[in-house]
Length: 268
Image 1 (tube, rainbow, N blue to C red):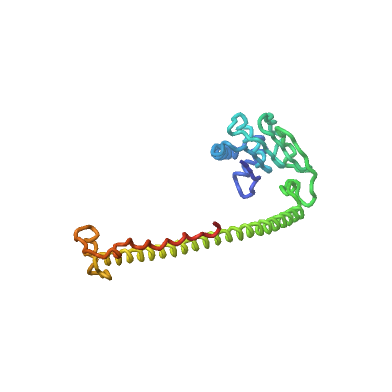
Image 2 (spheres, rainbow, N blue to C red; image 1 turned 90 degrees about the horizontal axis):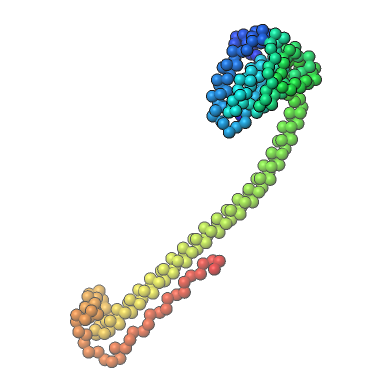
């Protein structure tokens, strides 16, 4: 979790009044408001480590905030870095921080941070003549370095995108090919099953017709028509005694044609 506090806004009466308090070495009203917001947010993320930073007036507020929560393990900062923090020769020194790693960064020649007494390590940086000594730009990388970094990052992302695109396209082709094969296999299998079921139904119908014709011959009828089916059924049940027929007619009916072999799916 990162907490960043900006410096003075010249259009804010609150900030200007807090600058006056810094000059006279007083604790700041802004610190109280920041403390309420920080504690409210910090308790929502108890498993996170907390880091803080601030510039100018924001650095002073961050320093006071770190002291206020130092004794509370669930609120204390893990590390704080402040930049060109405002101070005064009238202010008392801060007591050292034991839990929080504290770093105060200052540009040589900055008057605002000249009298700030850091409760931790102080790091002085050489002044860059193209910027004002108190400007936050003193701590930021050169624009050319940023452009070079963005260009390098863009090339890396472009290469990664091409690699991932080719990789994913290859995987996609394999996935689509497998899906097409599976769909085609299911379709072919359904077609074969349909054909097999049709052949089976035709075989059953042919066997039934042959049986009906044989029963018809047993009762002296050459063809069993729709009107005679009831009589044939009664004869089969024994309700009507069949007439005498020649011995040749009593021979067992020929066995039905064998069923066709089940269809073989692809890949078997």
